[in-house]
Image (cartoon, rainbow, N blue to C red):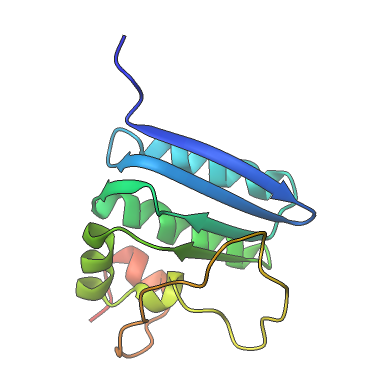
Length: 141
């Protein structure tokens, strides 16, 4: 039996969660991430940090999952942030100009860090602000 290509670890702490993903994020593993992030919201968690340090690959399917989850989390009154994206995802974030949606810390965000989650390493791109709906629908120009 083959090993799973992606492992998801969930670490709850009060009303925050740290999701650590390890392995490859692509079309095959995306549903696993969707379920994990939807589970956080259904459990009432509104601050979601995702540690991608152990991720070896992430394609545009992964970006789509993260953007959709960020939109759902924002609509529920929360925040979702990626930490330490792998080079493949960093490149996709730069090319699409969507890093500001997933990497930067919102202004006025004063809650303490979750455990030992470090600050994001990638700098948000210097692109214009584009509404999340435009990015998800492909209408961003």
